[in-house]
Length: 192
Image (cartoon, rainbow, N blue to C red; front, side, top):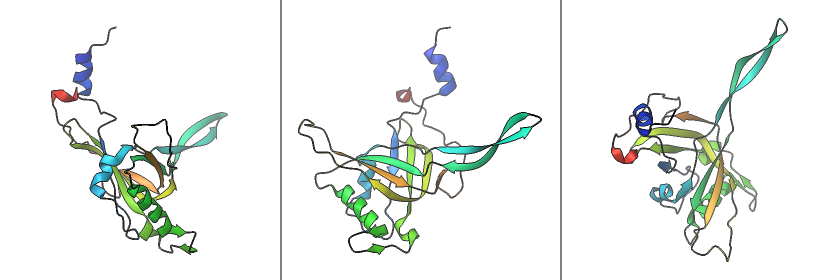
């Protein structure tokens, strides 16, 4: 059976696009950033919606192994790749964030986790730039700030920085509990 594009469009409508997203970024109270937070969405080259998994408990019954759902687990890491400006401002702010949590050089460790953790969001956008899905990632802090590569052969290529955040959990929507109500997309032909 040949695929009919119009039939697929009628069932799916406009499909979600990988390059239509926004990262909503905040710094915790212990960090005074130099980065203009309005630009972080523009600097974010890539991000993802985190993974969620339900564990499996195997129960034996009459010689057979039955899988039943167990506890929810999270991968607990979330990576964002950012473009760097010439002053490496966002990288310096990430390093300040890590130092606010634990500063090796002055032997200081934050005794207040809530001052160094914050919620971050990634949003799916439709073709008109309207938010259609929100993933709120709770209690984030940068656990790994990637290296910056210098390379003579990479002419006309922006420098990138990967930051891995550790988090406690995530929800769909902007609250503490998931909201599974779909947000309607803008219907227009440019999304097809």
